[in-house]
Image (cartoon, rainbow, N blue to C red; front, side, top):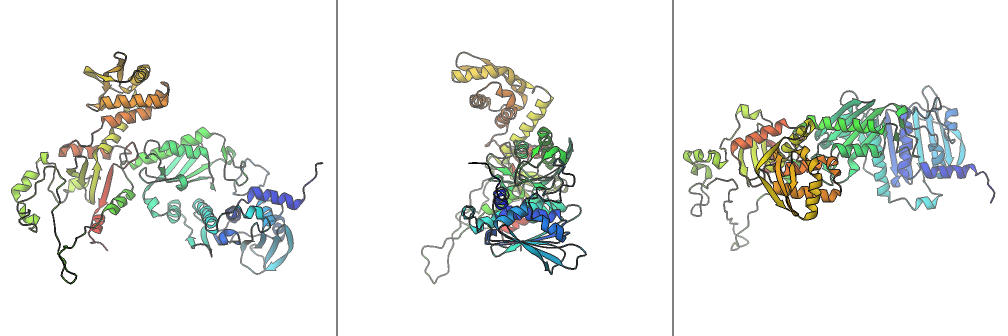
Length: 616
């Protein structure tokens, strides 16, 4: 078959297959054009998930007749002044969108520039153009797309349901609104609930727009990003490590005002949170990068959804550094969603009626005082089976309170903290519950602290600090600890022994099936050495290389921290509990353990009042 030139309408339909993937693609292209035209308000109306109707109205600069006619031609654009693809400063630049849309739908464009007596209306019906006609309208441009893919049934049948397509449009508009806080967005239609995001300007505009789009909850549980490094400016909000989602759909990336999907940015966020998030959980992030347009190539994808950085290492380093410093500045702060989960777990007690009661009789209730969970607590006299309804406060004598105040009882009778104690963000310890949870009180509410998770983070951060300064200090064992292991594990540990010395762990072979531990990290104290060695042996078997020891430093010190921390079930004195709280306040990232779980939960006074129905 000889080579022939394809007809213009077929060329446009082929181009539409690249640019117009689904109705959301049309909305993206048209809204980007409105933003490039300087619009301060953009209205989006859809019907049938965008298949039957898409209308974009803006108050931008508008177009004169010559520009309007040329706008529906292929490769016609006003956004490349010097034909330089290395200096793209607008959202659109290809000049294909309107021509591609007009080839697969009924397209009409009404536009009126400033100073014109009236507007003009241009129609393109499945590739056939109609001459411009006068149109009464305000300044700006209105683009209407009807019956998308009506004459391309092969494309139409691959679209999803109206609801799914409407949701995809919402996601596109959401990202465009997040990238342009100074623009007022209104999204409406017969296939959706209306959304209205007013423009925000000035200081805090970005945070305000993110609160509009993502929600106030995110703004309250995120830290601001502000970093300039190697020509890359990083801004936005990064969610606290305890504020996560089950997937990455709540991670938003913007480069020079353009919403993108980029593996470099995704990998940088994953690395920045590697120490802090729970497995299979994803942080919520809105990341904004500003970079010289010459250092980024946005011309690598037909829909401009992907890009390529010329210096990927600089971008990755800037993002990791920005997120790391922001999370460190947050200190021990944990997300408020943890407290909401706790409040949701509380249930009101039920009062079962007596089985002997008749339908018309008054209900009777039985009451059994709960067993106390506080160690060292004794039920007061008179609060027994012989007098189940006697008031507890009247039965507790002054001498009984004095006995409870002893450190061995681990129960503090003060109702309110002293002014000095109220200044501590994590409060003052009042009791230990179930030999693992510290109950503390500050000036605003109640705190529950997981002693093992909290101390695990403290030990881990100290290990990191010591490792950065050089070899971790070690402590010699008076008698080496001999641990029996399978021969293959002993071989792996023996090969890794020189590298493990950097962590303050000195091992040597002790027969064919045993390892002798001569020195342990000083921070480990009297921790679980046996469990640590077995964990390391399992890790070496998984990594399948002794060279991986140096590449897995964080995993190794995490194992050491876990086995060197205060264990669940250990009873602590009041001074030990308070020392743990003060260390948490002084240590970055202490709001979550090394596995990403929260280390404490704070219930404000108003939250506790809600549990008893005392708040309105």
